[in-house]
Image (cartoon, rainbow, N blue to C red; front, side, top):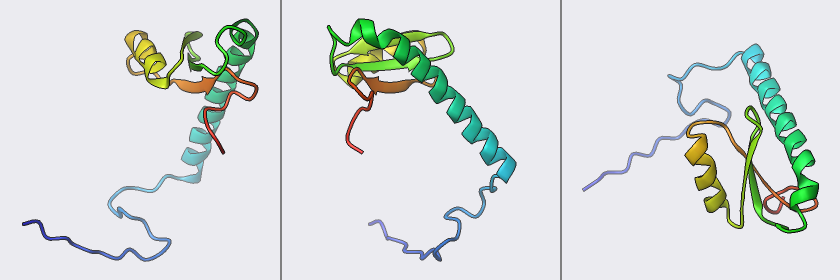
Length: 106
């Protein structure tokens, strides 16, 4: 039998105290990298959107910005499978071929 261990964590404290905290510089660097990644993906999306939207409206598009490759399919799973065949471990951004590019409700 598995015994549950309930351990209360004070509000605002770290869940795993053994994990080191990131410095403000490291956080700023990560945020800048994420911003650049999003910017590169948006540039590719804006470039290919006009030619793809008429035939593939509301399909998923997955973008790997460093190579400029993109993969489209009617479902996210199918597009992800195509993307992972070529870019196994790369960061990939998922968007939809619609007016906003968003994948769901906000």
